[in-house]
Length: 427
Image (cartoon, rainbow, N blue to C red; front, side, top):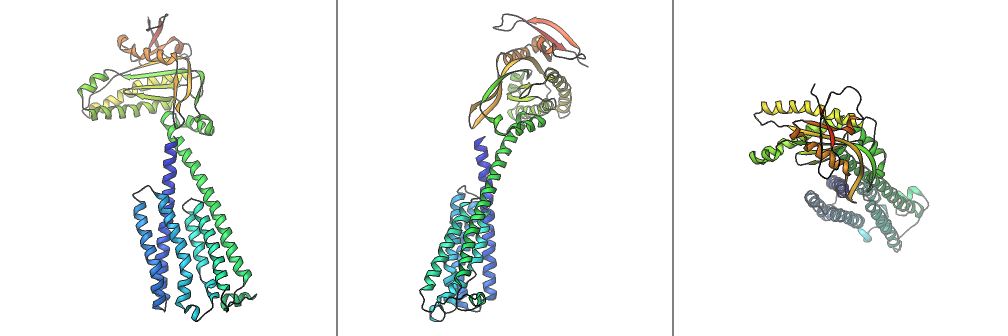
């Protein structure tokens, strides 16, 4: 289950990075179009295109690589480095395009639209659901803006003002306003990183729940699966417990002969259709599908929760499967396919039920003598010419209404006492 969860999280991360890169590509395209339409200086336009153009090409290549490879974190880191490179270079490009130090003071390096671009890029990087991306970008931008201020302050023409309008429109700068910009960028990065972390946490929980739901739907009826999910992690821990259940075995008659006489694809199609058909009936009566064993089915009634009706539900499922087999065979006959027969054996008794295996690959199953006896009861169907056989332990728990046929007592291998078996009359 752990590997499946990791794969789901990987898929969500890949989706997030893909969306992030797509948003950056669209942003750069819009940015280039705006520069082309608004720029009156060919030198400025050429400088911008020299930086943004290659970045756009790299992102487009990264986008197509991302669709085919699994190294998503490398692509994400590359995209982040491009962001940092763009916000680092653009202020000087714009500054030099309007004359540079020869004409205007370095203060104008602090008056570009770069902070707004940083905000946009931090939001886009949040879509990757990797908190480190917006955090790194905000820390890098904060450090860079502090560097720009120190660099600008070394210019003899550097001026400080407390007037906000003059700070925004004139050659001077306001330490308070600029500091507010820098602090806001830093804390915005922290907030976005927290949001990305929360989103990632939610996605991980969702992925775990999705895997667990998929696992449970393989074995349990929907209502039982929902109850188990309410237990959260406790159900999925290794270990078992002792309880009494009805153990159900079914098997297709003459399956070895069928496997020899018919092509493999026909045999597999038969098993797929048959198992789907019968498993739905098991779930209808609250049964738990333990496993498919080739042509056989092992199921239990009373797991994970025992009820007073487990024996009755097991027999009700068997009777309905008898009727369903007629419909199943009629459908196959109309398609020109061979028909089948099956035998069902049910026994009630104590088992050990729980999760067995490794931490990342657990199997919910039952073990014990009751399971072995149920298997042997099913094996007795053919010699006794019955399609459903139950033991006295099942009969003792049945309500009035079932028409049963008392058969001879059968001694199973390695058992000292014979078992009284019963057939179930057809309606």
